[in-house]
Length: 92
Image 1: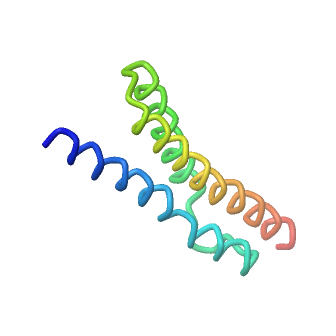
Image 2: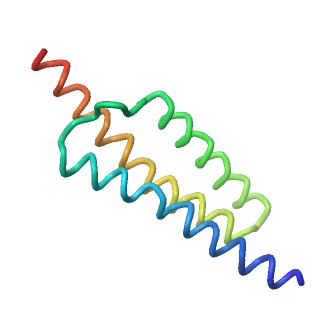
């Protein structure tokens, strides 16, 4: 049972990271950050970083790598939203 839960958890970590990809693609294509809260995404990034550190210290590779993958995909949303949000403010 422990192995089954570990496999499901690993899959869930991949799914979690993948959920940010459509948002990043939308930002990339539309070049607008309308409706995106950069402070919220910064908070998500912080939580993912802490989760990755926790995985490191607990020697839980699935948690660590899953949180790092989420940090990368969520971080891309954060960076794109910040970039396009700043560009929108400069045009206004």
